[in-house]
Image (cartoon, rainbow, N blue to C red):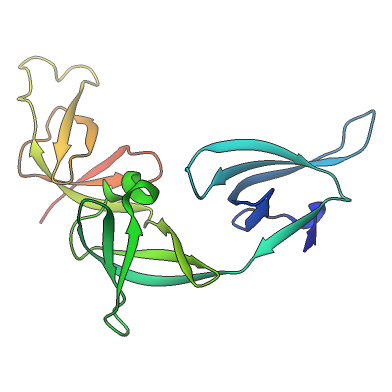
Length: 187
């Protein structure tokens, strides 16, 4: 158990029986009244974010998180399957818990799984990934004078807004936090 003032970004806490990842925390000292901790939390069960306020007297259950690097193998109807490269064990995570992250993973891609109490809970992606463009509408002649973008579809089904010069078969780098185009990769 920790006090409300000991909450830090990146921690996993249990509030009212539900697990949350702390995305952001601010120590607020208003001119009138008591100081408090304002947090932005992401539910590990649903993926929804919400803001919560804690006082310095609140006791919060801090959970120990273990991170393991794994390799994505495939997805079936219910689970995404990963392999631990240390012992070659398969790890399954329900699709409802990782559907958004799978848009950035191709088979054999490396990522990190967060374990809480020995159970795999969430996937942590690298900051950027490289994906091949499967479909891209042709560029319109004359649209090069302005900053024109078009929506392309990658090999994983992710839709990304890119500059007009990106074509089918190109490999692009995508930011996994925002889904934004970073650059075209020359291979």
